Length: 139
Image (cartoon, rainbow, N blue to C red; front, side, top):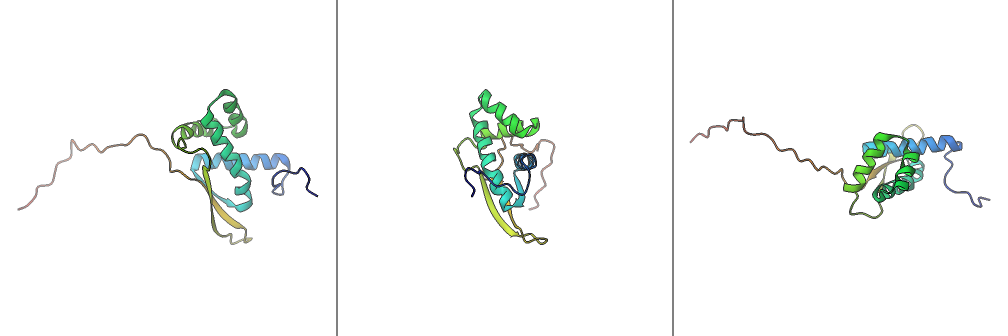
């Protein structure tokens, strides 16, 4: 019986599972989407949702729990900046799972885990057309 057993074990020990989920969460934050198996995606999705919610909160306790979970300054800074801008209009549902074709080697169901909103771009670069000559129109 599975009384009081939480989550999927993913055929790994506790430390291996923790490092796997940590790596998947980091890659999702940095890249915006990752391709993995369905079981791993379902295991890491709630973790990433909680990280984004904590980043939106921005309190000292939330920041320390994000640092403890990710243990990477680059992804932590990226998550904090995205949470303020990219996910400001959402309260939940920051990620989605898109099913792909089965993997060729072992027929495992592959999925793409991605953020719902597109990346936020605040700096819109305009082309400098001051030195460009306009073409002469022929009559």
